[in-house]
Image 1 (tube, rainbow, N blue to C red):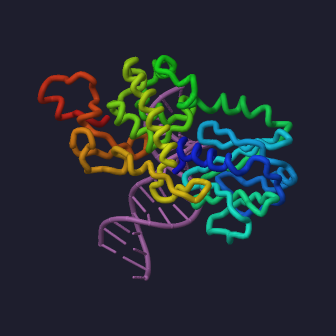
Image 2: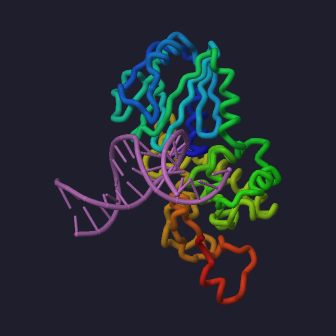
Image 3: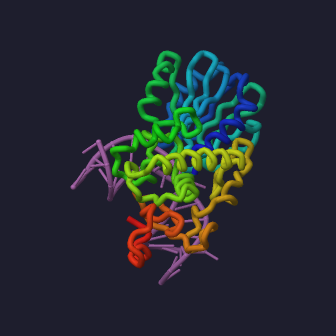
Length: 294
DNA sequence: CAATATACCTGGATGC
DNA sequence: TGCATCCAGGTATATT
């Protein structure tokens, strides 16, 4: 579910409520996520601590605490965070709650339990930046996200451009929905080797990435089946999607039927007319025979 | 090193 | 109101 916009919407929602709250107690469902929840450590470090601010790196949320510790949460596919009165009955798939001293609690709910919760105590917190810069690529909404950097990064890569966009080691935070949408609006076929793109095409990707992600954040994220912001509200960007989930429906730009194929094991939607394999039309008649696909 | 497969887990949609 | 199968926003790990 949550890609960069959904994580950012969650961050912004919590940022209006969480800072300044002192932690009273913690509750755990007893079930682990993709990795075990370090509940004893969480209790030891968080109890009596105070939330200061929340940052985002890639699809990770970094909750910074008064003593310098950092709580790192990844939402996986179905994770949701909410801030609500602690008396509200627990929902199915609630797995962790952090009660603060004003009768509210931060609650983590995750149906599929692909999420991840980790705690970096003060003595380790300085290593976080290093760990993230080693494993996570360029932030699409940051200053380093430029056509020339991307072209340089991709120049020797034969992997399809869609796989490149989704690989968090190169670019942080773009998942399957937004990779599909960005390549459509940029008019680029997802299977083109990343190293083959022109400077103009990288410029289009940068422009469309920023535009798409910002529009999605503005719309409160994309809710396909279960994403909710921290206030419990769904997102509305699904109403603006051009082709994700629209196999066999007409392309909004040219009315050609949208195709769906698998690329790297992920559902890949594209318009064979707006996103041709070759930028220039090859020999007439032959072009239509293989105007799409790998 | 790169591409692919698999595993983690639950639930909704679809087909019989 | 059954049961089997496939699919889903992510990512780490193993395997070719």
